[in-house]
Image 1 (tube, helix red, strand yellow):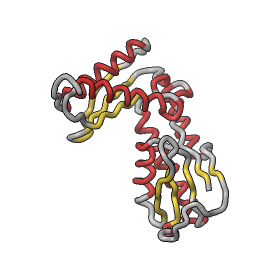
Image 2: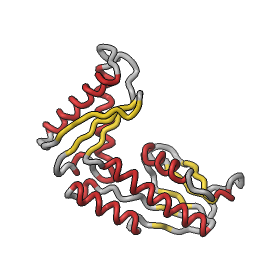
Image 3: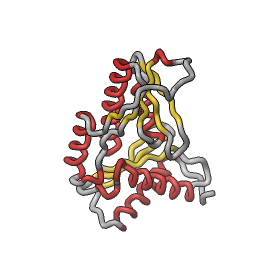
Image 4: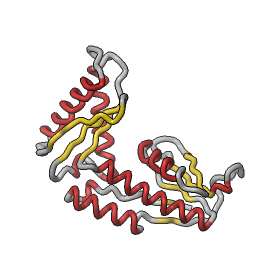
Amino acid sequence: MGEQELDLAQQAEVAETFVRGLLERFSLPAETTTATVDEETFEVQVTGPELGLLIGPKGQTLQAVQELTRTAVQRRASNRTGRILVDVAGYRVRRREALERFTRQVADDVRSSGVQRVLEPMNPADRKVVHDTANTIEGVRTTSEGEEPHRRVVILPDAAAGTGDETAGETGVLMADDTAAESAAEAAGEADGETGGSDEAPAAEG
C-alpha cells in the first residue's frame, strides 16, 4: 500500500517523474507530457529521436516500461490508481492502425473463404483492438483462446456461430509481410530510425 491518497492528476505526475528517470538512466534525450484519456485513464507520452530502445520488438519493452510505471505509482498511492498508459514516439497509435488494417484484411479472407483464422498470441491491448475492429465487420465474429501469455484471437465466419467447432478448417498461414504489415513496418522505421520499434501486424494461421 502506498504512502498517501493521490488523485488522477497527482498519479500522472508521479508516473511522468518515473518515466523521466528512466530516460535519464538510458541517457535518452526526450520530452515527456501527460494527457488525460478519460476520467479514469491517463497517458504519459514520450517524444524524441532514436527511442526504439524503449519500444522493443512488437512493443514488448514499451509494455514492460508501462508495467514498471504502474507499479511505481501504486507504491506511492494508498488509494486505487487509475489506468496508466505509456506511449513512446506515437508507437501505440501506429500499432493500433496496423492491427486495424490487418484485422480487416484477415476478416475479408475469412468471409470469402469461410475458413477461420487464428492470430498469433497478443497482449490484452492488441487483442482488444482486433476484437473491436472485427466486431464492426459484417459476416465475422471473434473469440479468444489459450492462456496468458499465449492467448490469441480467432476470427471466424459468423455462420460458424453455435457450431461448437472453433478449431476446424483448412491449414494455412497468412504471414505478417503482407502489404498492410509492410506499410506499418515502413512507417515505424521512418519514425523510430531503427528496427526495434517495428509495429508490424501479427501473422494469422488457419
